[in-house]
Image (cartoon, rainbow, N blue to C red; front, side):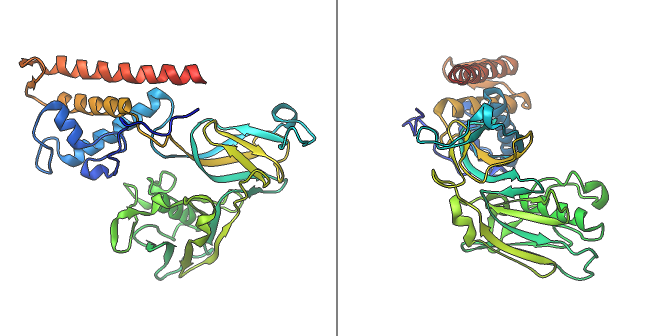
Length: 358
């Protein structure tokens, strides 16, 4: 049984790392712990630099504990499908599935794509997806791909977010990276790009495209971008897409996640059960992209993250800090070591609990 919430949970969650706010802690929590003046754009470290430290601390928390308390997309996780090991024929009144796969991560919030190999291609059973096919030759003019969700419109623009003069597959990869707002590792050596793109909604500069959409190139046709909605269930079918260049396929809902549909899940355990439209029975026949992460941030995780960030702030400082509990000054190294030790003790305790439950 999982806990829905606790009165002590950290709930001040409005992440914007450039403003010093993360999923697990905030710049104000760090300054209060250290009992120093609030961080700002003119302090050392600045509020944006503290945001970077928060981002690193959250990654460390996830790595040590073994799972996340924030939504994280896990991309193209492959599984074999062997019915005789994972479920046996035939389906009967005691077993309404023919097999299942166990995902590597628990606490699944959404199955973004559930792609099953059916002999000649992977067929997606889960997502509301659209496609853009890149033309074989450079356009020579402007090119804008527009994605709409609710009141928001996101424009991915040639010359700003991607280029089309290196071939259709390279272009498709750039478009997918721009939508995901990740560094274009595969194409940067050709394009000279040095950072990830940031695509925000028209009129809403704090709303990012990667909060609503996820994209890849088609594994069977590399010149095509497949774009999936991150909205719950079949809501993504209401998203819109247009492109001034290329061929577009509108968002179509493949969602059949119900007990009598194609598949059903136990998200907390990370299990996907297949009832029909199942994969071929061999290795790597199931390819899953999903969002995982607990839906609450316990007070202990907030405490650990705050102490990790505070320790990093001290490590880069050159003044002693007053400890209110004792009223005495202690050296930076001692303060740093105390905070780090306390944070690691919390995280190791959470890791041990998770291991015991598993």
